[in-house]
Image (cartoon, rainbow, N blue to C red):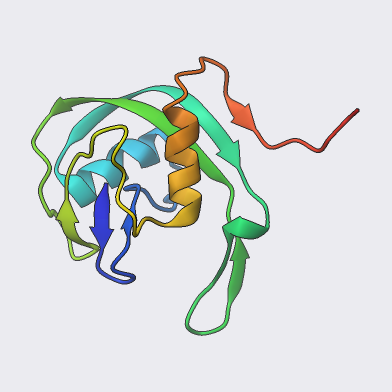
Length: 127
């Protein structure tokens, strides 16, 4: 996880796609830029959107995020602060996530930690 410099909360390294980039390429690039760790994406653990994924920028511009969470395998590097977006970068035990973690990021990590091989989607109740 990274301790974000803008909010002083812990979150998942990641970010927006560059034009022409594939989602997995974005994950690899963003993780390296923010942590100094090279990874290989192995599978998608969740695809989530909704009200808790709305974001308002300081200029009051609002966006709706669609978040794709990848389970990645680190292949090179050690966690380091690699850009201005992080104050600290480190691993946490599965059962000891930090208290001051971004709520939607905590939810996505908890879904990934279920080790379910199926991708999680929030779907309306279809009973």
